[in-house]
Amino acid sequence: MDSQALLSWFDANERDLPWRRPGTSAWGVLLSEVMSQQTPVARVAPVWEEWMRRWPTPADFAQATRAEVLRAWGKLGYPRRALRLWECAAAIGEGEVPADVDKLLRLPGIGDYTARAVACFHYGVNVPVVDTNVRRVYARAEDGRFLAPQPSKRELAAVAELLPAENGPRFSAALMELGALVCTAKNPSCEQCPLRASCAWQLAGRPQPSAEEQARAKKRVQKFVGTDRQVRGKILDVLRAAERPVPQSEIDVVWPDAAQRSRALASLLADGLAEQNDAGLFHLPI
Image (cartoon, rainbow, N blue to C red; front, side, top):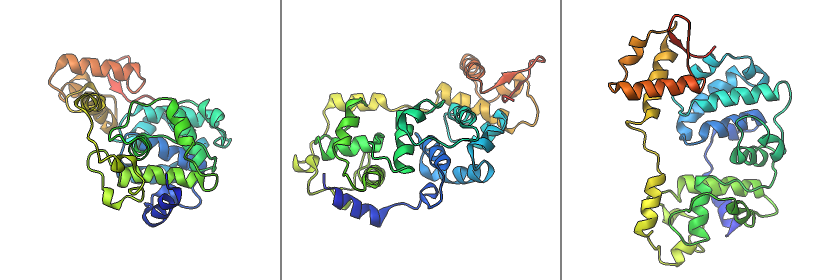
């Protein structure tokens, strides 16, 4: 892979994301990475800026109530991430976000991707950072495949072999940016790609995925409309907007399917995203 071509492209096309600006703390980078998982950065940016003004350090964030956290999280999706961040901040306390991947992995709610992203993008540790965008770029540029395979541990070693000794963290950011802006999932803008001349997929004649590969990829895409996750979100909307605990009747109106509604509410209670008091009323966790 032509690292210099990719870095030159990144110099000219890097997005001005707030967490990339000078002075952003390790906490700010960690927060941005968790918020951005499966959520477009355009939605994340204003929420991230609000959180950093309100809770600029892990210690500040750990002092918030769970209800405050869930209200501030709003509609970013997967609200369990917000509570795991709260647990993570409590574990860090007055200390600093670690620079070491293994230490980061010991924090609540921090998985392999997030740990590597914080170590790489904030602390400059030259480790492979593999998300969906990177996986897709690698599949096309190196393997000549339009669709990326299922995630595996082997891909970390494969991407690590691409990292230049100098500017490795910036190369990792550029690889991710290329997948987000140019080498997109459905309609890649190949004419704008700095890797076009050496891309294995281009050199192979842009082969399309087989029917079997397309079926597997379609199966991996998570639908939202009509799912329990959508119902959970509607119930959480009611609880976030309420100034006091609400009766079952205010929840019942958000979804017509009583069985699915009951299942979604039960899962919110089990996940600690909602609570029921002695009077039978529902509210966000305290």
